[in-house]
Length: 127
Image 1 (cartoon, rainbow, N blue to C red):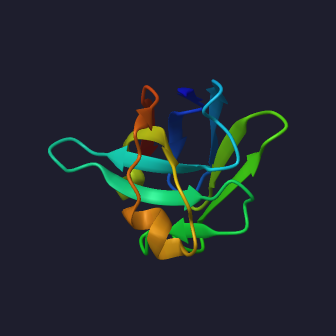
Image 2 (cartoon, rainbow, N blue to C red):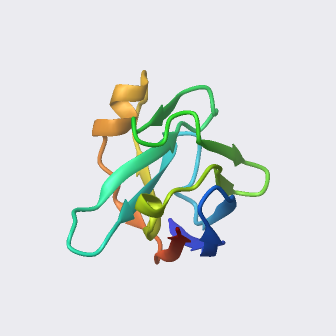
């Protein structure tokens, strides 16, 4: 699976951005879930949101619930992260990643292994 993330940029606090993750490869199939991670300078990479192949199961970190929405268009092999009400603390490099395996709940999205990674895209939120 090859992944390419784009859509980052500079936005003022309270603004919105939509990130896209374009996937390709034969392994990107109905067992593939996709997650968005972020990493700020000096901090660990954390899972922000994830979605199962069908879109029926999602996971959100507490810090983004109610502000971020993850979705996917399997016909386009693309996963989106709509980010609203952005805060300066959302500033980070955002990565998309794919994992293959059964998903039964949001918790399983959080704990599954993500083996395929795209390059990051920088999101900067100014105050």
